[in-house]
Structure formats: structure tokens, C-alpha cells
Amino acid sequence: MSTHTQITYVFFEHKYSDDYSKREWKPTLWCFKAEDNDERVFVCKTTSTFEMPEGFDPTAKQLAALEGAKAEALRQYTNRVAELNDRIGKLQAIEFAPASEAGYEVDAAGTFKG
Image (cartoon, rainbow, N blue to C red):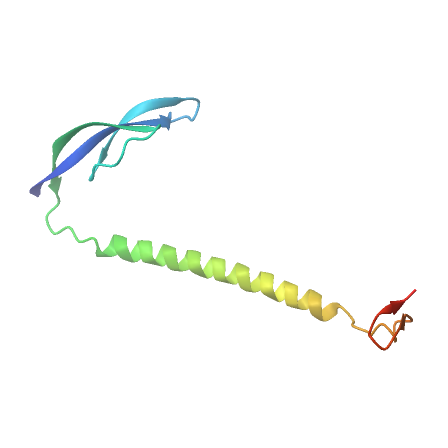
């Protein structure tokens, strides 16, 4: 294990409780100082120390995240192609007939005669 120290910023954030029954102010740590807003207020700057496991390699987690992102992109793509195919199918199912062939009278300018 190796010890690492990082500057962190403590905020109180207005969040839902663990059972989502109410909202409450909870402390959170950020790696940068964000602006205060109506649901987040800065408390203080501090230092956090943690133990990093020896030989820690983030590659496996990065690959898993990328595979998840790829699957989501494929899902969105597949859904969009299905929507487009549906619209194409509906348009191809509409039979077009010029107004004159459909029984309407049309003058030389293309205006319907009532």
C-alpha cells in the first residue's frame, strides 16, 4: 500500500436521505472548489489522505466503463434506426395518387375546383 494525500474541498449539499423520504444537508468532498448555489455551500479546504493498494491498475475498470458506454451508444443507435425505419415504412405505405386521378377536379394552375 502507498499513502496519497490530496487537497479536498468540503461542501454541505442538500440531498435526499438514503430512503428518499426527506431532503437533508450532508457533507461531501470535492476535488475542486465549486461555486455555492441553493443546494451546495462551501465549508472549508482540507487535506485527505488515503491508502492506494499496491499494483493498483485502473485498466480493468476503464475497460468495463468503456464497454458500458459502447453498449449504451449501440442501444441508442439501434433505437434511432428502428424509429427511422418505422417512419420510412409508414411513408412507403401511403399510396400517392395525383388529385385528378383521385377524383378531384384541378385547373391548369393546380388549384382544386370545388
